[in-house]
Every structure is written in C-alpha cells, then in structure tokens.
Length: 303
Image (cartoon, rainbow, N blue to C red):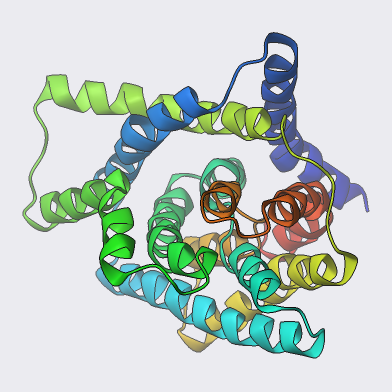
C-alpha cells in the first residue's frame, strides 16, 4: 500500500495538481481553452513528437509493433464495446456515444506526462507514436462514429489532414532514416517548443473541465468506464506479450491504453450532436477514477 501511495504521489499527483491549477484559472478568470488548445495542437505537440523521434534511438520493428498494437486494440475494443452496448439495449445514437468514449483515450495531455514522469524519454518517444496513432483514428474513425456513419469518407480524410503531428511524425522518421540533423537555430527552437508542450497540455486538461457537467446514464457510463480503464489495458498487456514487446515500448503501450477518455471526444460529440452531455460526463468520470486504475498499473509495469 505504501508503494502504491508513493507511485501515486510521484507520478500522478503532480499531473493532477497542474490540471487543478488550470481548472481554478479557468473558473476564476473565465479563460476558455480554445486558444491554448490551438497553440498545443498546431505548435507544441508536433514539436514534441518531432524531438522525441529524432533524439531517441527507436527500433524500427518496435515502432511498427506499437502502431500495429494501437490499431488492433482499437478494433477489438470496438467489437467488445458494441457487443456490450447491444446487451444493454442502447439505442443507435447512444451506441455512437458509447463507442466514441470507449475507443479514444487521453493519450496526449494526460498519457504523455504520466509516462514521462514514470518511465523517461525512451518510453515517452514510444508513447508519442501511440498518441499520434490514436489521434489519427480519433480524427478519422472518431468523426465517422460521432456522426453515426453519415459523414463522407472525404470529410474524414480532411479531419486526418488537419493533424499536424502526422507531418511531424513523417518528417522525424525521414530525418532519422537519412541520418539528418537540424541546424542549431532550428534545433533550439524545436526544443523550446517541445519543452512547453507537456505543462501546457496539463493546464489545458484543467481548463477543459470547467464546463463539464456530471450528467449521464448509469449503465452506458459503467460500460464505457470498464472498457476504457480496465479492459483496454488488459487487452494491451495481452497484445504486447503476443507481439513480444518488452521494456519502455511495453510500458508506454500498456499505460497509454489505460488512459481515461479523450477530452477531444466532447468536441466531436458537440459538433455532431452525439449525446454531448453523456460524453462530457464520461470524460469527467473516467478522469476522476483513473488514479484508482493507473496507480496499480504503474506498479505492475515496474515504475
């Protein structure tokens, strides 16, 4: 028990405190998260992804395995969640909201800081790959799910092309493969921007909770919470062992899989009228419950 308390205080509590600071800031000064979100989305996150890929020696096989596991995890989790929703007899619109919140985790502004604190730079580099992969699916499959299947393929692709971290990922891989380096001035610029990303993500997490409302249906909420916080990391453990992952890549993959629901799902739910009240409730509840599952998971992974 003492070990678990230490893990929580050393790895999760600092993150929650910074998020709380963002929440208080938003509550007192009525700061909206949109401007900070755009800065992180278009500048800080791509810089972080690029730096992690170019500054950490990643094995190409492990890179492919990380992306593959993230994909397979999404497909299996979708099937299990859909089956659970059918058993609970949820209607079509609620099923879309359940799938949206169960499949897409907060791999960015929650997952990356936790992994950075717990496992260091190498694990963080693999976590960034998992983050970019999950964000790609959020902006493509997530849009289709939120719109209940009525969105055109072209619109989903346009959402994918809006993800700057994709381009940072591609550029980083190219530079590593060709053994290229940035000029000193650009390198320092990227490092400064990357250093700002994780603190900004945590402040944004708190700001986004200011407008959340605790209002939702109990059975679908329980289903999503179980899928996101319990089933997903267990599936990731099984898949990681099946694919032979060990060390930092294993730690990053499993921990990212166990993160609470992504705050971005509230944006998609609002945009496409996909039970936004329920979705915001899921984000709040899973984030609130996440220390109870992430702390023992950190212990299991050897933090």
